[in-house]
Image (cartoon, rainbow, N blue to C red; front, side, top):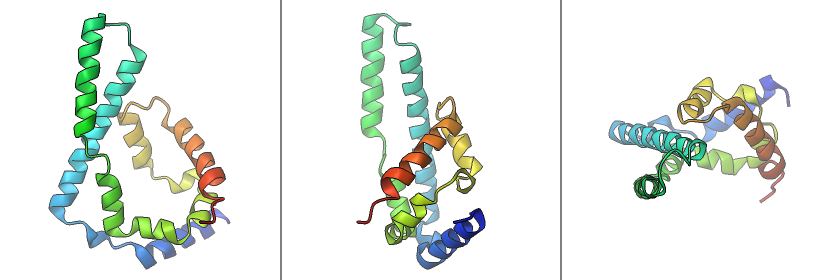
Length: 144
């Protein structure tokens, strides 16, 4: 499938399933805040990975405990619920093999790359490349 064909396919799939008005303004605000919170948690995790020995053991244990408490309180599944509310999950269920087998970088919005960067991912393009290949090989080949 060419880039043009893929865009047409995704557009048709979205026209069939996606209803942007499925999320109301207060829910959108809450989702935005939750995504910002998850981005902050990701940055904290990156910092903890990069500098595990910068603190004494007692301080490191306290920071780890605080991080785990924040992570438990995070609304991780709100993004999936929003995708379900607007029909994105239904669209993916309709044609996962075609969506993921043909996934390419040009289909990933630059805003997503910037989000990953703000979330502390040092090289978002590398992560996207790996994720695309995973999607093509693992998800794109599924028939169920």
